[in-house]
Image 1 (cartoon, rainbow, N blue to C red):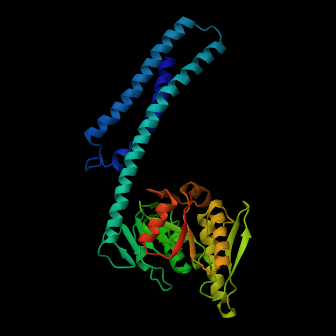
Image 2: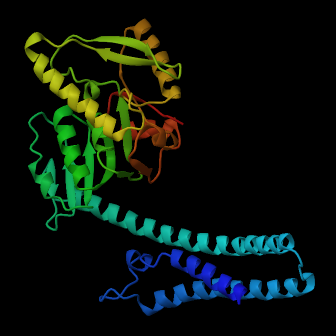
Length: 358
């Protein structure tokens, strides 16, 4: 009786872990919300598979128990431990396989939603900001200008999509729009390109972001992270040693006296923005990697010697993202080489050197 009770208890615990709500998210549900027959049958097959495994183990346990006939508590405890390990060995692959299948189907549905949202934003919509009739998709396509009107973003429905294509712009409106996107818990979807204020602010605006295949996401040492812009016209570039030992290029500029108040306001907002969205409280923009910093230093030396300068930008390999940002960022297809990045820059007709982060 104790064995059957153990079986029932453990079996109930495992079956409760099966994601019943996945039937809805994968679209396999009736209009009334009840699971359709095919999905219910599929789930029952999984449950039966686990149940049969339990039955086989219980039968084996009975035979082992009779043959061993343990007479002391230690032997009995060892036998129970062996059975527990067998149960886990059987159930773990079944349960993990089922959960993985659910995640794969969900990811497929998400990708379809992302591409559908992008197709809408590519169409005949107002620019730079447009909102779909159902309030589920907010499009941004253009530069982040100083007087950008972000009021339409407040009508975006919760858990909607913020679809972006931008070469960037100024800090204050980028932060203001990003805060609204986070309040709506929207998923940021990047397509084609995302530079400057787009990568610095829009990409990490909310809790998750998705970059479509072919999207070029670029960071750089430009005014989109410098709160003194546009309050001064003369800037000084200096190299600063970071905690991991690599030199990092920083732009310094002291604003004029009349612009001090505006400068401090933007600086305060920028500090708050990154503190809320980056892993390291002492984060200093722009984000980069040790590899990128080495290449930037070498290029800067060449430009200094030749007197010919080019704007420098860089990608960030997705494997570094979790140590930089709290936002979950997924690339449908991160570029595979410097040549691929060069081709993407050429297609956009940009006069900029973009470093590929391998």
